[in-house]
Length: 377
Image (cartoon, rainbow, N blue to C red):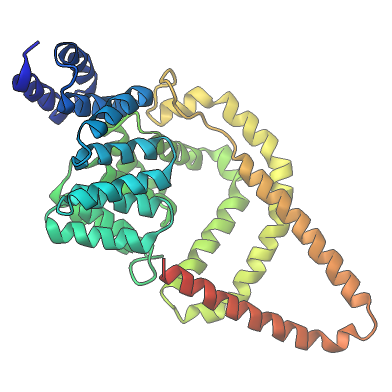
């Protein structure tokens, strides 16, 4: 193994080529000759992160951070590690520490921005993207972050799937090898526009470029589910409700005048869904679970996922949906019971109009407060 600066250069070349397995192997050899080399610890920690060896990554990254607390890169690596360990607040702290030490690195702004977006702080994610773009206007990752942040804001492209796709496509023209952009386009086609045909090639492309990414795997499994004729029937009520909710959300985000006409119809549809979904979950959950279990390997292969891959997500019925549906059933029963009790009270029917008017006022006030909070995020 080459020594000193030469060994570091060799390891950096492996990092540039994404040869993380080789970097780990040769990094261990390099540390045997130079155990105090901070840069080698950083590179081995980075490789361990990409290989999913989080304990090994923590050991090397903490060593590098302790060796030079003024170096921003170990703080950035600590942030990535905390994200992988599902500790978002600690990750945000480390990304901010990296930015404090080097406020001119767009990559740190991008990492901080994605952390914000993943955990609901859309406004901060948007501002981080703007800062990254100021530093490097040609940075494709910053452009992708900005497009995604705008898709979450009412002042941006929230509810307008076509505009979101157009933004991602313009960035892809600059960086066609960015698998995250292919995924964003496919994801938007699938979940915003409900177009499986348009989503599938993009999601497959993203999965080809990063076959171990669990998020990409789950999205491709959703494509397979939506193509399966049996699952189409089993999930039809759920699709109906989510499609109408997205349409209502899109009209509200864009302040479309049709919202006024559709609001009563939408409330009736949502109420009907609350009544139907619990029975759907109780009647269709067992056959859906059994059907997916029987076709597990076939569905994984259809999604271009190796069934033998460690950690590959298996198709499964969303038990959280069952829970929500049961809660909805209880809510419908409680509302029906309360309505029956109120109407049995003497003189209540004379005040129904006043009560409904009061409830509408409360709904309007609640909607205004919620909208203000969303805009201030």
